[in-house]
Image 1 (spheres, rainbow, N blue to C red):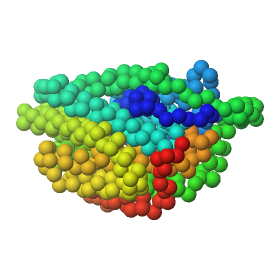
Image 2: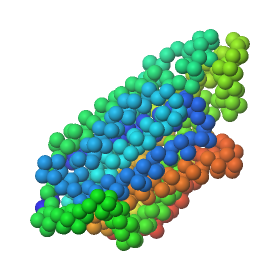
Image 3: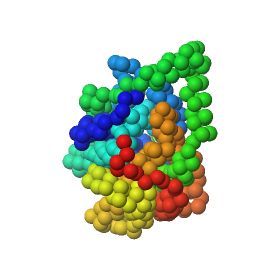
Image 4: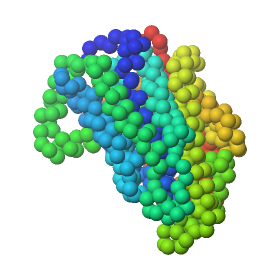
Length: 482
């Protein structure tokens, strides 16, 4: 590969624009997908296993795509670009179709395809940044990704708040509450955010593809790619080659990446708890909806659909709970938009701090800020005061989206950047998978089936994540290193 030159601010900006669309989609998954499951009849303790798509597709798709992209080169299409282009197209199609889900299982199925598409796009994008920047610009490049992570998720979440605020339909008449189309259905204002996401996903990726060339492999690297292709000259060898490479790379993984895996175990388990249970939590703390209220509303809707005529008082109760639930979804969008807006502002500011004090120290403090935010949220009953913990959360999220990658980038062999970025994603999705299969029973049997306790648990896990960072042996970044 040719010697890398320092890129300008705007070159690095254009390189990362595609992350905006990918993260807009991720923002909708964070905030809108679980409420959509609830709108379609899911109970809150079922949310973890309904989210199995994320960890499983991430576990299977990202490392394989990473290994394949390491072995790809086309003078016309490049190395990483074909993968995140295809991922963006599939993502756009899924986002367009998602709000038309007519049943819970249709929504769950689309989530599987959407997650696979996002994973196909995201992992090569991480490697794309490392491929195109010299070592001394890695922290800046990955923190620029954090900026676009914040921007994409911010716009996604604020769109949910704005559309709920201004385009929510008036409550249905009591006579129509029992109709199947009105009970357990997705509000029409949710559609608009998904349509915007469908456009942003493909448009932003096309911008980066057009604006950013990829470094061609050196003659030696090209020869190695040819030899790999000749060695894997039949279908089954081509299928098994990336899988074998993944296991070989894990076996030879640098110690620093194993240390990062422990941090990620606590961090991503906690984040999945937050995204799944923040709306159920603020339904209780901010909007006063109790578990008994939700059970009563569900019972009345089921009775009505079975032919029982509701009294006006019961019909108004059902409408009231439905209205408050929609407001909770909208306010979750505003809260999540707030922390991602903070991420946009703080992301690049972390670069000089990381160089001065080390990425390790700054990341540790940022994880403790996130823990503080999560432990505060359930104690706040004022909707304006909830923005304070979101500021701390945004600082932590800015660090999580960039600093770990710069911390381990020197330890990753350049010819295996794609596969190791995929393995790092395995460190993300394995904790998510563990959360989806374990946290439902934990919540139901140990945490009193109370979503508020899920947020407290997430806060404690972030404390453990911050402590774990202190045990990582991270090499200080040399600003003069090319």
